[in-house]
Structure formats: C-alpha cells, structure tokens
Length: 147
Length: 147
Length: 147
Image (cartoon, rainbow over all chains, first blue to last red; front, side, top):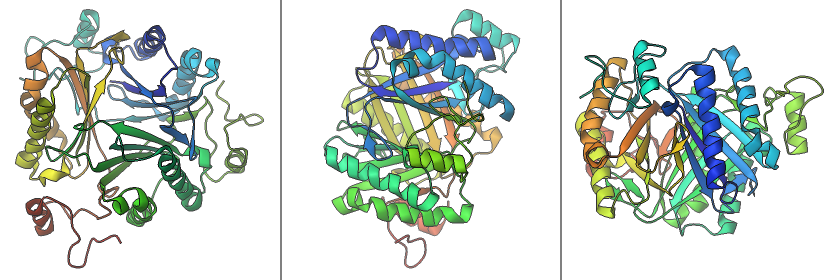
C-alpha cells in the first residue's frame, strides 16, 4: 500500500527519471501519512504508441495514473488537499514536461493485504514503526504472523 | 473516468481497430451518460502468448476487460442494461471475431480523481458542459482550481 | 471473477511455471469457493528491469499481485485465513524462490460483471453448477440471457 500504476509513453522517462519519480511519490506517503517507505509500490508501464486513447483518439503524450491506497483511510474532506499535494509533487514528470495527465484512485480493504505472507501491523503502532525502521516486513514476537 | 483496460492477444487488433474500438466505447459514455468525450480513457494491453490464463489454461483468443467508472454512479437496476449496451457495442471486436471475453467493473470515489490537477466539475453542470465543448480540462473563473 | 494480475520480473517464470502457478490459483477457488474453474483469470505481466519500485528503489526480484474478486463476498473474519491459504499455495513461485512479494485485493460489484455478454448465474445455483460442469458460459433456457 499504496500501489501506483503509471501508464506512460515508452520514451517519457529515463531510468533515473523513474527512480526520482517513484522516490518522490514514496516520500509523500512517508511525510504525509507516516508510512513505512517500503509500503509504497510504483509500477511504470511503458505503453507503445497507439495504446492509450483519450476520448477515442490515440494520445502518446499522456500519462494515466491509477492508485490503490490500502493502509490508510482518508476523510472525504482530506482527499482534495491530498490530490493538490500529489499534483505539486509529480509536476516535474507530467505538467512541467508538457505531458497531459489524469489520475484516479480507490481505497481497498485493509484486511485484504499481505506483505510476504505477513499481516501488516496496525497503522501508527509500535510494530509498524519497527517495520519502518527496518525497511522490510518481518514477523513480530508472537502476533500477526500468518504462517 | 471511465478507465477501460483491455487485455488482448497481441495480434488481435490493428491500429485502426483500436481506434474504432476506443471510439465506440467513448461514444457510449457521451450518448448514455452525457460525459465529455475526453473523460474516457482506453488502454490496450497487448499480451504475449501464454500470458493470460482462464481456469488455469493459457488462452490466447480471449479479451479480458476491466473498467473503473468514476464520474457517474449507476443505480443497481441500471447496471445490467448498461452491460447489455456495452456488449452490443463491443461485439465487432470480441464476439463477432470469435474471441472469448469477460468484463468487470468497479466504481471508484468521485473525489479521488483529477485531470491535469483540476477537480472535474459536478456532473451535468454548466462547467462540465463547457469542458465537453472545449474537449479538454481548464480552470474555471474562480472555483475548482487546485493550484 | 476473480482476476489476478501478477506483475513479475521478466525472467521469473517459464511458460510451465506460469501454467502451474495459474492452475494452483484456479484450484484454490474451486476448492474453497466452489467456483467454476473458468471463472478464474490470471494475467502475468512480465516487467522489464527498472519498472517496479518498492519504497522508491527499483526492485527486480519482487512480485506484486493485485486481485479483484467479484463472484463471492468474504466475511471480514474470513479474509485473514484466506490470505494464509493463498500464501501457502503460491509459496513455490514466490517465497520459495527468494522473491519478495506483496498482494492486495478488492471486492467489486457482482452485478458489474459479464462473461461473453451473459449474466453469470447466482452463486451456488444449479445453473452455476451447470456452467462449472460445462467449463464455459452459455445461455440458460430462458433467464440471464443479455442479448
């Protein structure tokens, strides 16, 4: 959580661009939601020309982003400010390059989620902070282990 | 909104097929939901042979479609007729070609959506009609701007 | 239903691996949810190196799985045991190979789903059992047909 899918033109980003873009996204969740950074997954999908259609017309200068957020629920009034934060953070890879873009997200069930077969600890818990410090998932002394 | 993902065999569609298919989908939303046409995104994912499995068996003559609808909510009793409309509209690219197909969709939160960093105007509003006429998103005189 | 998307390194699986992996997933739903096996779709997405980022760092030894379940609803207390069953079943293709992995799922509206333009029969019904035996969707004598 979250999982970002970025559908982009195949020549839009260098490997370094992708790393910087993904890192900026990840830092947003660390800063604004206190998530362990490794919770943030970003997948770049380089689309061949003629794969993405906006209003029925091929658009090869467009970035379509889709997000599933899992670990935290947003109050409805927090969503618009959150999108504003996102828009500013990702501007260097979309608007500032003259690429059109659209983004939408969903919130999926917290319980229907596992990392390495483990149940992630409650948000904001000591155990979550331990995962954040470690940078990876690991079984706790007794609880949360699935296997 | 909506976002259609079409996972198809890599040789299923010519560029022209994709354009016609995407345009037919987009027109459905213009006609039946009065959406600005550019709200409709369609992404074709050409899958290499041996990528899609139905019931555990590779099926390279199958089209799997997944939809996220954002801008409009459907009354439950409207969904089945809507699927019927869709099935008829897309028949030339699936059933009529002897391709198996399956489609499912979800409705995601209206608020968790932005085009070019702008909050899309309320459904059916004057402002949405302006966007529809323009064919692109733009800030209103004062409201809805996110930046 | 369900649809599994498996985002994996491009060299992670042979064609036989994919078949075995997809078959194991499909059998889970047959065994635990009595689904017709052909309801289970699995899509493998081989990601080029440098496409998947975990916590802002490229990770080419990671498998990210995303599931949409449609045909059955889980009681909340059943989800964690279900994830345990999944984790054990898929271990040969992830943990046992030293690949990191994360999985999350969503449940999407039952009504917003069609196979070949047909409305799938009610879960557990005689008609569903007929589909399961046949191994494909077909119109019933009178009901459920969409066209």
